[in-house]
Image 1: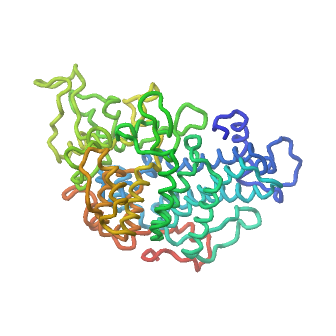
Image 2: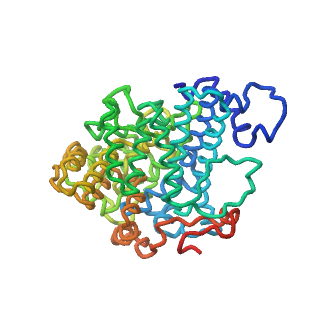
Image 3: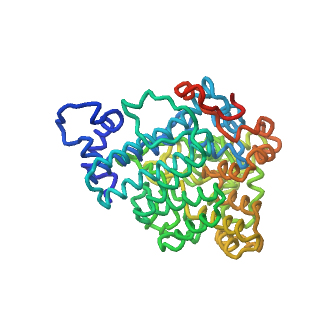
Length: 533
């Protein structure tokens, strides 16, 4: 498999947008003065690889964006029962002031989600359909087509879970169909038939591992397991997760401290344990060609401890933070006192004086900062426990005094696969199933907490919260289980702070509204989601 940075592929990537987005052989019938033609792109491994580089760039672009301080990467993590948001644009989503109108400015914000995933689908359709021009599809091309199919399946699965009333198509946009109006939503059967077809095709051709940031077989099976859970096909989820476990390529990191190092790539590291837990991540390495921009995600999650006299922004404490997004007291209450995940691994609970020239009287470098007092307004800004999962890798490219930073974002990892398997076994075989308990307790024991001898939905939810908080999966899980409304009403924010989502939440908010500017492009009969008409 060629890497992203092959010079010839990158040259093709520069030209690809001039071809893949707006041209077809029927649309332009002119002499080609370059060897980069549609036939080359769609019918050769090198051309398909260049098309996939373009598609991966689109795939990552949604969070490689600093609009409203990188709100797009944060909307789903904060719209849950685990977050408290102090201020900022992302607070407007967490408090349910934004994101629940299909009209005007709110509609445009929701539109960015709808448009992004349908853009992935359209680019994938172009690649998949274009390959039909080839007289012979080599195995290398089948791998590349499998990558496109997985990204299409993921996009449809995401759209369905967010918007419910979606439509599916396998046709790329062309001059022949650009103005056709979509008349109705697709049925659930049609949606999942296409998703499963894409994933099953990909499973026949993908390798277990791939270049970091590219689709692999484990990602296809992991998504397939999540699809099975959504459809309550417990045995199907078990089969897919066990395939990953038995592959020999993936295993849990022995120490949770080794998971999030900012690079977060599968495979060997320059130092420390080999990472066999990451299944797929977004690549933001910089200044490599094609690397993503610096984002404000870590800045949102990190307390603004530098405002405390005697403390200065440092890499050890996560760099400069805004103090906007935090784990709420409900989430923190789920951790056992000895849980390693709260010991500066997933969350930092304490900050320390580190600025010798500016120390207050009576304290020394290394002393814990205890003022402002807990739960005061300044404490929420300066000392609230912070999430470390998006902290940059410690490199010369990271200035801790600047809020923007880069880290490769983990999207799927094996810990979630274990928890999917634990839930599937529990639902199939009961609350004392040995496999369910085995996978659940593997997560617990590596975190330094005692194993359990009983598992039910609440146990699964609690362990998913401890292990996967702020990784973007919680909202979907609560919706799948049919408890999203109840959990937001009960736990959003803190009991006495920034919890207005508890009263603003409405039953129909479990679906996002379809943006009105998209409905305007479709047939008048196309249905808006219930509650937004």
